[in-house]
Picture: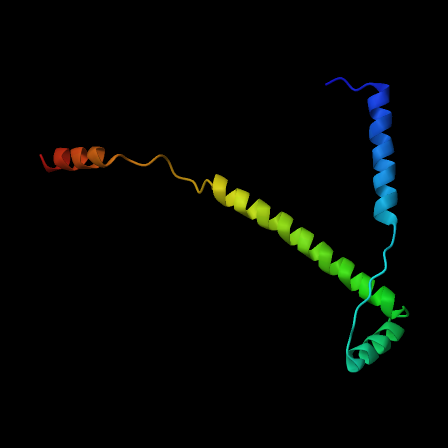
Amino acid sequence: MQRTPCHIECVEHVVRVMEKVMAEKRNLTIQLDAATLHRARILAVERSMSVSRLVAKELERLVGDEERYQVARRQALADLESGFHLGGGPYTVREDLYDRRSQDLR
């Protein structure tokens, strides 16, 4: 497929739009019991951030961990499917083993 200047411009435009959409923030409402909220406020103050930012960072970390896990899982399954060469030559055919044994007995 030949890349025309129009094609490249279209792709660049889509990339810019996607970056803008990905950068937009959305609100999230959660309910926590009073004790958890109290501890979260203390933790946020210790880390010099708001509770909202603390929750956002933890969710980003959780999502990132999950994405990395899924990538690693897919790679591990692909490795298992393709197998690993552990050395050694090809297997000997059973009949050849019996032929050798019968020749050694003579």
